[in-house]
Image: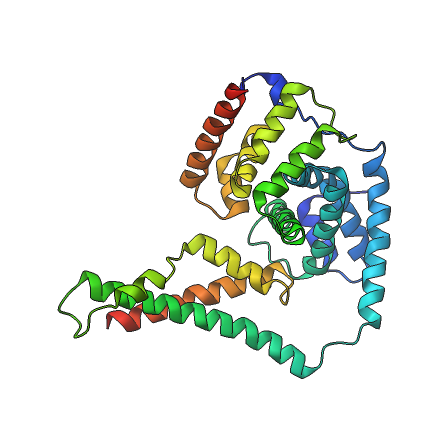
Length: 182
Length: 140
């Protein structure tokens, strides 16, 4: 049984009768990475589960027309990122509150979240990250926790490497300032 | 403090065997969605046309606004090339577009009707192509 790499997955998905097997391999290869990428943005496990399902639903319906201009990994991360940002936007609309109120709610929920296992200082870090604008949060999470290369982030987010570096630098300064103030 | 290794550790946990069970749950969800699609009547040509028209009208309005802004700025910055001077009140009302943000939000606006990545990219490329054409017309 060959190992399912990206090339095999894409080719198999385009062959009639092999789509489910190929998609199953894609899910197995990428579910964890995509989940944690989403979870860091939406914070709550149940929300991350919803967004992950929505992401992979979109992948299922679009994979046939995937043109391989970007890598599969980049494409999947892009969809997951868009779904997470859409989810947060919808959350803001539904609550009819500003982002600050939503972020406040998410921050307070963390303290009693059964699926948050960090200590006090890790909690403070997550609360500080939540206070960053959404796209800057993305940049910070991808660089700080995932140690992603700027070039890969640039492909996923469609933003220049220079802008990403500047955004990350500012994010670090803001977070250090917030943590230092406590 | 951010340099400490402990800080880089993931503080989130999740239910046991979540990833073992996830593929099967996803499979059921896909089957449900496809069953819903099969029973839902397809939008009629009028609804489809209205949706497409709404997207393109929004896009055309945005491009027209951008063209107006650029031509007005030229008149302001290069006096004498035009017979009329910009109305300052109008300038104040015009939004300054952040291209990256605008493209992203424009792509998101259309996403309710256009579901896939290919369609997003195509929509953005169309916007850029139309934008360049407008600029050439202004400078001529």
